[in-house]
Length: 234
Image 1: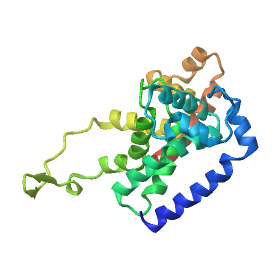
Image 2 (image 1 turned 60 degrees about the vertical axis):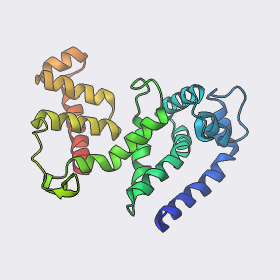
Image 3 (image 1 turned 135 degrees about the vertical axis):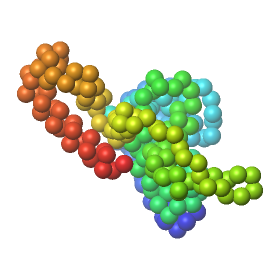
């Protein structure tokens, strides 16, 4: 583990030690009704959702419920991050990059706050770790040119073969919208973009949504600005 990872992990551990025994936080977690009895501390919640290395159907279902709460509750999101911390460290060690752990933590927070519980039936922790790694690293790697991705052919490095076209503007737009969803852009806003792509008439879309055309134009401008931020960050 690099010094930077060690420092970040130590800071998280110190923060968690304080938070886990905070009466206000513990009381708030107790009101979620995840456990049969109110927890004595937040470590009980982490262990119940698989933090004690228990990979059971019950732990996975509880984690799914906690992730659903985390969409609107930062305390729940922080508990999920604590559940994932060991896995994030393992990925960071494999990546061997100076900022790997920090980048993964940021990506994991987005993954937790935007995760769709209906997307997969099991293994929520593994899905969240995969989402975090994708958002932090794989997306950028996928966009590297062929020259940056040579192929290993048996016992030697071979010149890369040209990749097939990845779908053009439509694919790029789909990827941007997926990234926007991961970045926390509201589903309702993305649905509006989809409507406008299907029907460019603002007046007709406004009538369909039963709002004024001005409202649609204002929302369109706001969403466009947010999508530009996502594109620049990608």
